[in-house]
Length: 451
Ligand code: ADP
Image 1 (cartoon, rainbow, N blue to C red):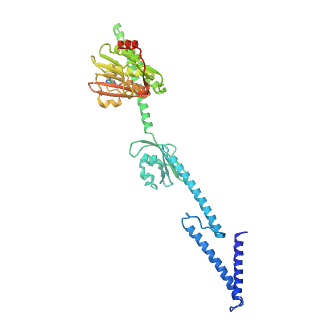
Image 2: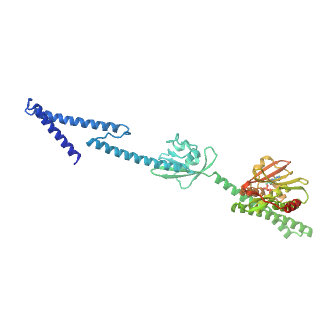
Image 3: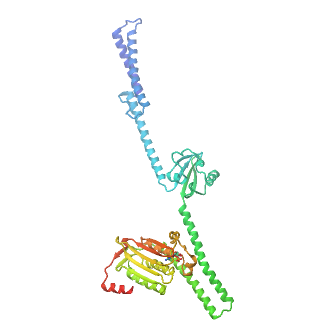
């Protein structure tokens, strides 16, 4: 039965009961013939309305409050109304909570993005930004909300890009503190709102610059001997040369060709180092044998102009690529020979440190290197003295190769040098790549006699 019918019935019953009670108590004693029943019925309905109002007031008070406590319950109409209102409210609250959670998850997803995200409303005022965008543009995500973005990001490139309204291409600008280069892409969405995406492209730009420099350097390095060669070819073709002159020109041409060959060889070595996987940690190379071979090379390269000493702790192996290791050590020894004047000393030492890491040291008493050049020595084509390097057959790539090799073996290159006094280059190899092997007495003896 519906509630209105029940309540009408209850009111009618109350009125009837009141009328009967009035008739019984007062009878027809009033000035009018039905005063008793009328008073009784009126009183009963008034009591019913008063009880109803009280219950309604309790519910209204709960509705006006925070609705944290349960709604006033009870039997009947008001009880059910309280229960149903509370149920709808709780459902809405749960829905809202779920939506809030979803929004927080979404925002924390954007927050985790490596790129900056800035949301602008239709008036270009900041709605929200993640911390990367705040860092890129020097914004405060809380303080700067509702601020016009062009009042805060004043870069002319950005302002005119935003005003032009053509957002197909990103715009490149410097971050406000000038520490980074940013690529900024604007994407319109919704009703006039905009999404501003920023990406730090400093590294990318630097790598691009390095690539451009590298190509320019390689072209320059190859063009120089080529120009010399073509000059000689021209001379040989047009001038009547004596046999002695011809031999001299041919000798110079051979030198230039060798220079180009060395350069191309070093470039290929670098490309191979960059393009191949790291050397296996379980391919072991005996340092004794390797250094024995390199000792012979150093002696022949020096041709008696230097005092050369190799001091090798015997019985150790290094995990890695033997030809890469040989190439790195050869570069260091060749440099020592090339940059040490006659009568100078060149010492190579291989030792294992107490922490089991390996140390290969090449020390010379040569021309040395001024302190400001040391951090740049391993850059490609970096030379302290270009003409001396070229005269002695240098390509400017040797130390770059050494650094690559040692890094691929998990180690590092340490350089110490003093101008006019000499240099010391150290290759440090981590302990897991160094192991001791047992040696027979025969091997030790033959090894000692070789050095
Ligand atoms: P290069 O082929 O010019 O020797 P490297 O990369 O091997 O190129 O070395 C870079 C520069 O470092 C050299 O041009 C030289 O100026 C300097 N250098 C390298 N080794 C030594 C050394 N043992 N003594 C003095 N200078 C050195």
